[in-house]
Image (tube, rainbow, N blue to C red; front, side, top):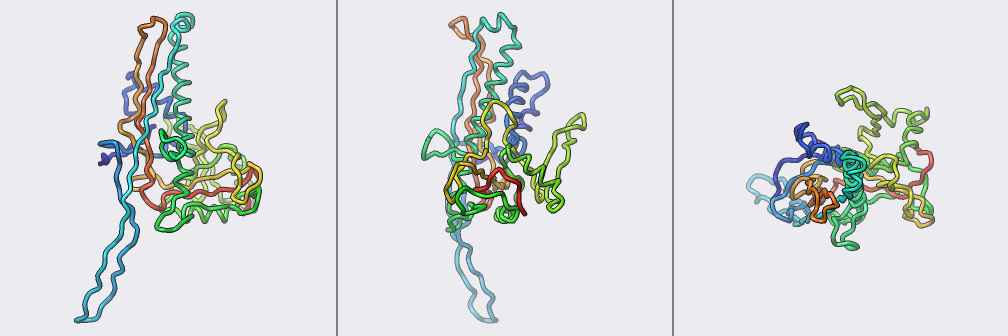
Length: 325
């Protein structure tokens, strides 16, 4: 049974006092993907989260005086989700610390935590237990589920042509309309210029809003883009690592691997959210018995649940070309 409180990873990082040695590494991890700023996680008691999905509603009817009342029952589908363990040791040679000081170890820890976050983000999209039973299922697998007896209720195609096509806002609108109380759009980072271009195109102006996040202590933040009132999440910014989403998919109609998908999601209680047996743990193990290695251990027993049948929609088969109406 789940604990009722929900918290994002970014909020969890802020829950530590400034002087707590656990706060800096967890803040580093929270910055590894913007999904951690938006999607809440729910704590578990036990190893399995059990829930029910509405399947069929009863059909009550009006009646005349002295007529018998209608009767019937609902149908529900039981479901459950498991968590998966991510475990890693960040080892730093003592000789490196002796030569460069403790700051070098801190830098190594930051790199390790960033990689840890990127592993989670990649699994968040592409995790497939049928391929690797150690992971949790990601959004791509969940979007292909049959919900309410309807196949394809979460999976939309920008085009059925070979090779894909430029993104159609009309098709994006259909994907948004298929999600119950949508909150965010998760899109490839490489598509950001397309949305910026869309915002300055006079014939399409007004569809994309761009504003600065002024919620920080300095009142100055990064550019926040939204479409139809839904904020964009990009995964993580330009760096040496591969992107969380990119233009490397084959279109629904086949052809070259030059297309991308985006996901419209509804975050929150009873909808799409993370599961965790306990929050992310970062422990300084210290110097090992070998006398030459410093170790930091990171652990997270984590998963996902898409509780509402319509909390996800995927729109695939669009190319890195100017967005159309």
